[in-house]
Image (cartoon, rainbow, N blue to C red):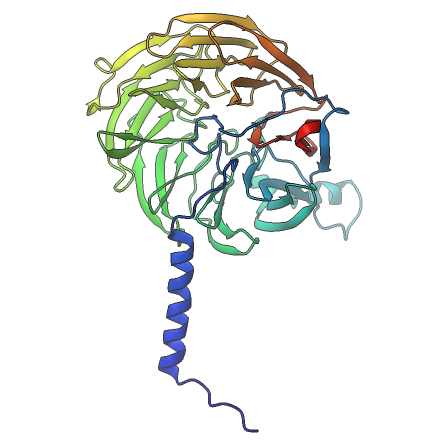
Length: 447
């Protein structure tokens, strides 16, 4: 038998074009999410609430632990869940050249160390690591972080069959859900002061994140299918302490989307298609902002940063230009977090300050219903599921509190491991990232 004739050049080009077109459609087309999926930092709405059922409320290191999987490297990205898979990022330190010996060689080798910035996929049912892919490799000397940070702290984002990962400056990528890298962008440079912290969001065709470094901070949008830059908008003038680590939130106002993006010294909102600034509220001398905003009944709630006590601002997002004097409905500096994000359940806003003072207040007026000092220091953001609020502290304890205007402790749990990442709930289970492992918590009836 003779070989079939080779396709003519024009046919080959057409076939390649069709394959690329189909790949783009597959990524860009909306795909429905299963109930219980947790697809980004702070879940489906980006605000920490879940409609999952039978989420566990009681556990310890040896009770209701379905599995515990040790994780390679170090990272504080929160786990995201899609169907039967869990995705997260990590950073593994790679040694220098060991071909020479002696003290001088050890010093030289330390300078040659690298960080392998990686993406992990785990089986949600068993905890088995399904794949482990390197997205980037960076010289360690180029990377600096805060003692509480990691080189893999921003949380991944899943949408339409694509997984988006971000590691701060010079490191943003998209993968398919089997671990194949679709694109990389290593051309966005800024000095984040303490390492990357804020996570990316999606709005239409744009992947958007904050680049609030020590100099010339800006917000940027990349094309979600190619990684190419769509727009870049500088922040307003700031005299000093420009760095921040917040995650934006997309909201809809009068039928139009806008992206609310906290920064040092205030918060601004942007048109996600063009990057044009819509409005801003300036809060001078409040820097290193971390919490993600929430949105409820026509008000944006955002926290400020250091120095001194943080403030919580309730802002009407329908203004234009500098609305600092006209659109702040109320503000408070009582028991406001510098790090954990606020949470709204019903018409109440729940928070826990870094020093452990939890509170519940009326979202419309700011009136405090209750406050309670919990044990320990707090970095992870609280979540809400099944009528309860979960407050995890840094030493592995979690206080499960009724979502109500009266304080009621449902359970107090302890994994006895350091935790900075936020929880990911799903039906009958809770996924918790600790310093060295990922846990699946499942009560007996949910196993």
